[in-house]
Image (cartoon, rainbow, N blue to C red; front, side, top):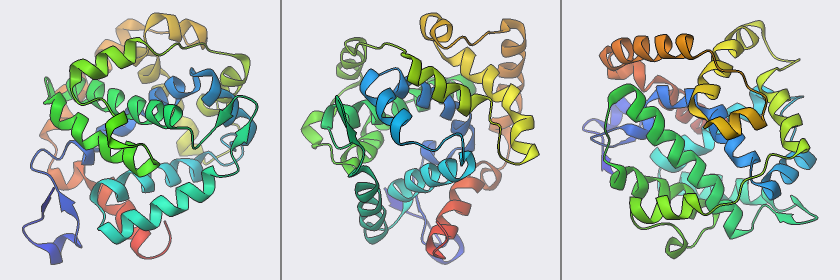
Length: 257
């Protein structure tokens, strides 16, 4: 990572020339990454038994985004601090057949974030340097506690790993997905966005998983939404496209993250 040209103006934010991880449009794939995580039976059971998605959807979102932005763009001290926080949160997440600190599960969680980021970036911007994004995603994995040797070294190795993970959507995963995509709590603006979130999530999932979660897909609406995103989003100023990243870093540094 290269430091910003003006550390004072950017608050010490580390920035990449590509800036892929800072793009706000990647957030649109967040629900897809979560549903993929839940489709791993061990992750699904752990989240169902220990998560509070339904009661605190915004708090969970803010916590996840803070973690991702800090480990990608924070200082080494900030990365260590949030890694300790996540490690402490994961310690009690243990049950029948799952442990949040299990390396295999941590690899899967990081893999869903990487795969979704690639899908979203290609959807809006076109082809990406998958090796660069894979190397950047290794930061997510290793901060969770994954040894670097356990993270796929190349896109080809990642594809082989991805194809070999057995997925099965069990009822606890469906229940969490329903609470996530049809929130009963939260502000009106968030609930107003959920039809679009459901549309994007359905469009990004493969048919088998989409059907397993009972997500309908309006192909014409999805294609129209993608066309608009491709036409508009890349033309937005970088300061707008990277605004969430800067906001979450600023909140974390003020002690509110």
